[in-house]
Image (tube, rainbow, N blue to C red; front, side, top):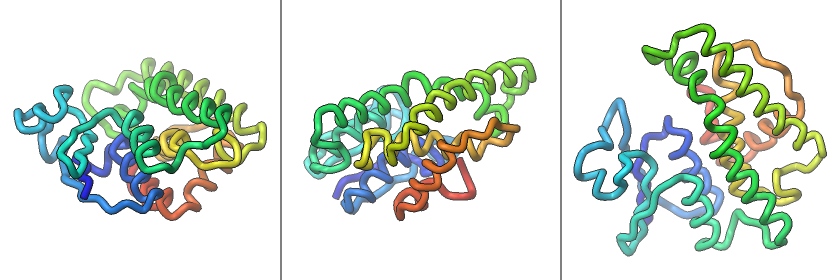
Length: 206
């Protein structure tokens, strides 16, 4: 049985768990990641030299890491969660890459400061600047979703929706006054209507 190493409060771990649930593949999860089990120890670094979760270990012992890469790997090896149409496939991969390169970095100061309450992330000017940047990035997503497609690649739910959906969950769960993005809200609720979506975008953490 495939093993997933990582804590469920990690958005990147939840990407992999959501994908496995959508595929219907059983797995074992081992709790790794601060504040519980430090991934910087030699045992974990031998699996992922970056000391970050998630790590996926296949039945044959092969080890892979990096959450969005794992989403594509699972989709390709399990024959699910990526569209067959080439243009739709391109859209799915486009938005998956955008989540990592544009959307994810935009919350880099806000989430530690307002959601995690971490020391050192309490500068009000930096928080305001970061909120503006995050809001602008979410505005890009809003304009895309206003085109009326149910999912980012079109009619088919894909790994892009897992990554971006979890990012939307983080947006709604981080406490600050937000601009109302109606299309994003409808998209988010659509994803939470899926059994695995509801499981991995819970009310109690973002």
